Length: 331
Image (tube, rainbow, N blue to C red; front, side):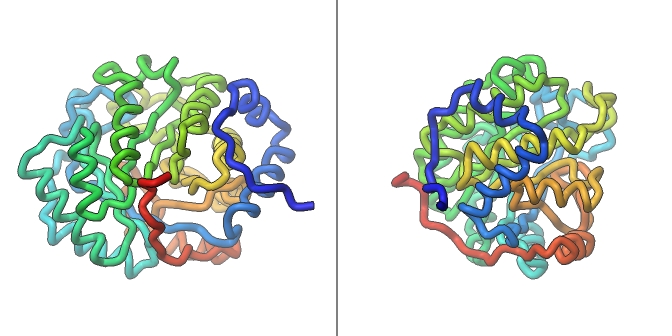
């Protein structure tokens, strides 16, 4: 008998820890089963991410090469011209992307001419028929409302890690401020994209705790990116060991089981994964990737369009048809 489709918001840390630590094949089987109940297992959403303003950020996130205080090879780039961004968006659409994400290395959004230009970019990308997403740092309620009015579909604001481990990675803002921005986004009727990074030096319990923060929200994030640390030379975490693929698989599978309706995004770290390793992640419930001209995922290497098309073909997967769901404001 087919199980009833139920979304839970009352998970406990013990329950998620028990899921995360299951024997690997049993865990993947359970996650794959849940995935097939809620999604088309042969479809993967293709998203393209463009850094519209790069570097010079005042934050001290230990993993990020865009922090002004670290000496990295990343070049500071002012906010790109709107026409340039829209040209990238059109190219992404032509390559099969259904979501276009714009990222700016800001601590927070300020009500100035740069934000006015972001609003114009959102309107332009929306008119192309793409789901438009932004990640711009902390956001006020009124700023979220402006973005929603311009046609913003999703806002990315990752928790990064657990509340308990957060201060070890970032000191220039608090975990609660992350949650506050997510609340502003949700209240404005914009869908939420929020996940985390593994490989920061966190414990298994921290990983479970981060997922618990997402899985116990009143409304789960519609999108949950799972990132493996991209070790950027010049940052405090540059010498951390490479994340083991099975750890990514466990995170993706646990996220899929706990938040069955969400898009689980296999995000940063793919460049260091083989096709077979990525295949395991798709089996475990990942159904979205970032792709592009062999450019960057923000400012770290990312596989190119040609490679990804071949990989999807080899795995029997296909790009998800572009569609836009209604606003989540009434959820």
